[in-house]
Every structure is written in C-alpha cells, then in structure tokens.
Image (cartoon, rainbow, N blue to C red; front, side, top):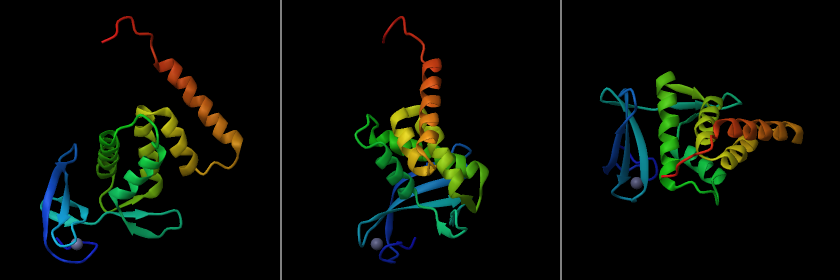
Amino acid sequence: MRCPFCKEDSDRVVDSRSSESGRVIRRRRQCLICKRRFTTYEKAGESFKLYVIKKDNMRVPYEREKVIGGLQKACYKRPVSAEQIQQIADKVEEDIFRNFDKEVSSAFIGESVMKHLRDIDKVAYIRFASVYRDFKDADQLIEEVSQTIQEDRRVRQPKLFEG
Ligand SMILES: [Zn+2]
C-alpha cells in the first residue's frame, strides 16, 4: 500500500478491524520509511477510497483523522478517553459504510458524530454541534442546549443501588 505521506510502498499492518456488517475491513498501517500511520479501507479484498462531499460540492478523500481531530477538540478537558474517541469514530464509520459505498456527505458524517457523541458526553456534544451546525444566532444554540438538558433529565433514572 502506497504511503499517502512519502509515497513509499512499504508498510506493516498495525491493526485490523471489520465493520459491524463485515462488509468493510479497516486497517491501520504504519509506513516503514517515514513511520507515519494511515488508514485503508478494503471491501472483499480490494482497497477503495471513500470520498466526502463537502457543502460546496467539492470531493475530498475521507480521513478518519479528521473525525478524530474534531472529536478531540470537542472533548478537550472532558472526561472522555482516547479509547472512547476511537470507539465513536468506529461507530461513525459503521454508519457510513452501512449506508454509502463510494461517497458520503460531510453532513451525514457530522450528524453521525453528534448522535454518538451525545450518548457519551453532553458538553462535548454541544461544543461539537455549535461548531458543526454553524448556529446562526445565540437563540438557536440555547434551544439546542435546553433540549439536550431536558432529554438528559428524562433519561436519567435515580439509581437505588450503586455498583
Ligand atoms: Zn511514508
């Protein structure tokens, strides 16, 4: 597999994981020349590129690192572990590959990130949503926040026994 950074064709597989449906195998690879890591996606033995359609209709190759980067920013100083961030990215990729083969809109990825982040940390979710949804004004943001808080209260049940 050609390294996207230095273009050398020499790598080792660090980690291999298939999506929930088993349709797509994701491999983390490390370039043996420049030591950088990259991700490849394979379907039935062939590797392919997934493209993201942005708001302006430009297509760019999908990069897991971008999803991770967005999550890290949203989760800054929040009690969300690096492993949880990876797990959210896994779930997002499962959502993508369950629905799309070659192209996916950036809007779909954003909504998927929000859906899974919401289950993990409400503050991080609001942060991500406020950047992502590009709130037009403060009212919209406040509405989103109060909705989330209300749902959170509804979901949370008092626990009789801990542990
Ligand atoms: Zn390299």
